[in-house]
Amino acid sequence: MTFAVLFGLSIFTGGIQRVFAGLQQAYIGHVATAVASVAACMGLWFAARAQLGISALLTIMLGAQAVAGLFLLWWLAAHKQFAFKSITNFGRLESRHLFKAGGLFFLLQIGTMIGWGADSLIISSTLGVAQVAVFSVVQRLFQFATQPLSLLTAPLWGAYADAHARHDKAFIRNTLKHSLVITIAGAGLGALSVFIFHAWLIEKWTHGSIAAPAIFVASYAAWAILEACGNSFSMFLNGTGTIRAQVVTVMIFIVLVLPMKLILIDYIGLVAVPLAAVIAYLVVTFSLYGIVYRKEILQISKNEYCQGGKE
Image (cartoon, rainbow, N blue to C red; front, side):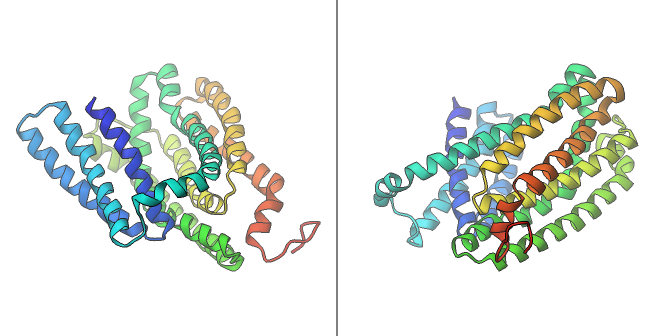
């Protein structure tokens, strides 16, 4: 019951975080979340020392984030950017658009969960639970290389949306170019560093209980770079309202990548998971965004577009 209530509240407070991203004030939300996380860690330490129950631990961890979200709601109200009396009117005016866009984002999230979140299930059902630990450790290790870049590119969603509404294609084009260059360079450098020191890092992290094959780590490094670039590009697509193309792309990626993982894992083992993802991602992304949706994307980011693909 405690988890259900706090989880429901977190959905609401997560929406408040999105408001700050749309206002290009994501840093305020990040600061509030960081303070809440520090407070939650301190609370968990005291709760563990006092040997409190699961309900108390859940309340401390999820409750801290809920408090941060409610603080952000107060911030909006204090700066006259939110008022309860206007909710009904705005809800009636925007409900159709919100349900349409929200429905596409819902499908996109479901597809992402299937395409990216089924790896542990595939590995455990074919190679055993022990290999899931290897996969999870390597996955978390590469997040040190990709998550900082996600923090930098995520706020661009609101910036792209604002520029798209003002038809500022020069800003969209330049921001997309710079964000992709920075992401490729940052992810490449980070992934290379993790790969070079992965054996030492994993040994220290797991006290020598887990060892990851170098070829698997190298394959996952390639996937981490592609995933970071994809996240950066998705901020452009989200901000410019290009959601339907993403849904189609994700669905085709799922149809291609899941059978590849299930077939290849019997022949090459754990390395099949990131390798299949890399192959499927390159094929689907370049085919759809480079050919099928190329004209639509160019029209968003270029000043003018002539038939035949000439700018």
